[in-house]
Length: 139
Image (cartoon, rainbow, N blue to C red; front, side, top):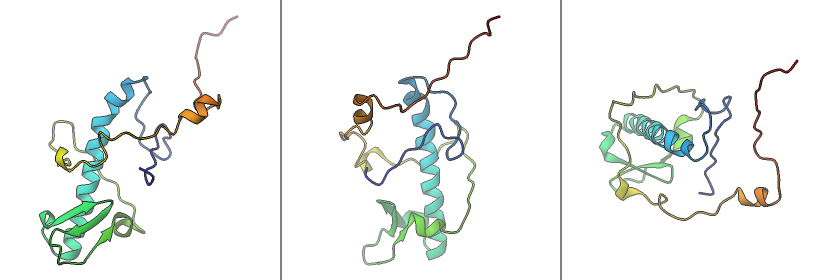
């Protein structure tokens, strides 16, 4: 979790996911984000498979590092190494198209408790979010 930085609501750096709707934002955004991450992972695996002349299913990913499933093969490639100096734009699959998701049995972080990083700022009354109310002009 220490290596993860989530960026939401910054449309210059992330996709425009529309408005936030309190706790419904997770319900609305979680599945599309999971599918997008899975597609990105599959793209990186396909690139590594082509680079190493291996079938995609002969590769695995752990902690952002692609490795052959054969433990005797020492090759490894970090995601950042694979995309360095490139600009890639992937087209997201439509919602009705299957996407190869990580199997639940491979989860290591999902379901684990994580410290809330937003609580200190909330407790101190620091301004984190700005909400603008648009109303009628009076006159």
